[in-house]
Amino acid sequence: MTGQELKNSILQLAIQGKLVKQRKEEGTAEKLYKEIQKEKEKLIKEKKIRKTKALKKISEEEIPFEIPKSWKWVRLGEVTNYGEVQTIKPQNISSDVWVLELVDIEKESSVLLEKVLNKTRKSKSTKKIFHEGDVLYGKLRPYLKKVIVATGKGVCSTEIVPFKAYKGIIPQYIALFLKAPAIDFIINNTTHGMDMPRLGKQAARNLSFPLPPLAEQKRIVDKLE
Image (cartoon, rainbow, N blue to C red; front, top):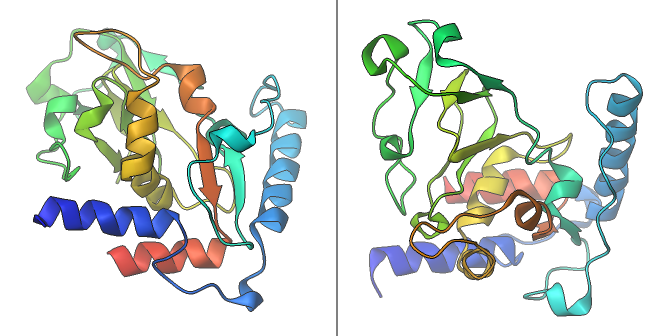
């Protein structure tokens, strides 16, 4: 087994609830899910987010593996704002703004290779705005597994999707979910385009997401780090 194969195996165990033990005192994902929906309703009323069309319930055929009883299968679009982004024109990007391109992220490892400011990159195209803590997912050729959690504010290529997790979801857990072998397989079977495959917005929002209780998410991320 290679180092990458070992890493992939550990990622898969993590999202199946087999990396750390479940603890009764940490509650259930069902309770967490209800809290997330309440938060979304509050944000909609405050006009901080817009109401989106409800996603269909997950069918038995869409469940790729078993998860612990304290977890819950949800759709990624139910617990994140995937696809809801702000853009900025190149002339409005300040020289000291971080400009992230796909080439800055190493494939497979998702290591950020360099952090380039606009005064060096001199962007000439429309970009997407992201904030610290956002998940930044490379939708172009997703098999390259270019996904990081933003360490600060900046702008990125339109081939990168910045999105936020709602209350009770750790962005680092979402990042490891997107790189796990079973999910990677599903993603790469739902892309469009032959030479330059991309993951579409609705396909991403419909991904089946194994949600653990918040405290267990923290323990999973800590264990991996």
